[in-house]
Structure formats: structure tokens, C-alpha cells
Image (cartoon, rainbow, N blue to C red; front, side, top):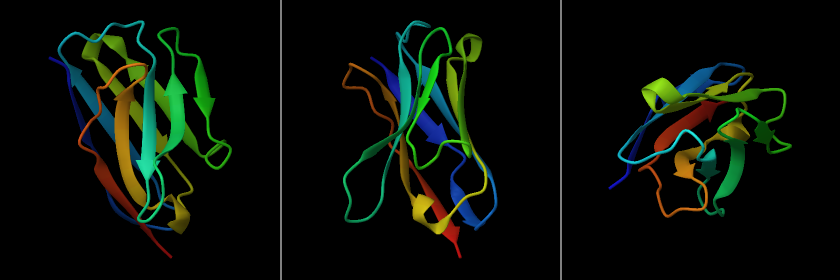
Length: 113
């Protein structure tokens, strides 16, 4: 059984920074593509960023240049460094193993203006 546990969310002012962490337990391979998604109230869940086993990254246009995804396979952890946060970044952020049914429980990020 795979579990993903996110942490690091919180309340921050616009322009601030947060770093989210996702710790995976169970059978997660270093080759799995990992991703961060987010869901704002009343909106569909959307992709924020992905990272392959070889650390190739991909970002939504809305976060390019502000967010950085990274992974530490030795610690089974994926990170999302978020800078220059905007109120529109407010959402619940989820960690996901792509091409699987594994999702974390989510961590709330709230950016005040």
C-alpha cells in the first residue's frame, strides 16, 4: 500500500514563499513520475508541476518561473518550492504518482492580498 503525506501549507501574504513536501511510503519507485496538483474552491483540479525519475520537470504556464519541483529519492520525498505567491495560487495542493490512483490528502495554501 502506498501513502503520500503532504505538509508545508499555510497562510502567507502575496509575494511570499512556501515549500511543500510530499513523503511517500510503500512501493514508490525512483522512476515514477511525480506531480503536484491543486484545486481551488469551485474549480477543477489542475496540474501544477511534474518531475520524472531523471528530474526532468514540467510546469503549468501559470507557475513557470515562480515554482520549482524537486525530488529526493533517498528520502522518498517530492518538494514544491513556491515563490512570489499570488492570491490566485490559493488552493489545496495534492501530491500524486502519475499513472496511478495514489493521491495525498492535500495541504491548504492560502495567499492573502
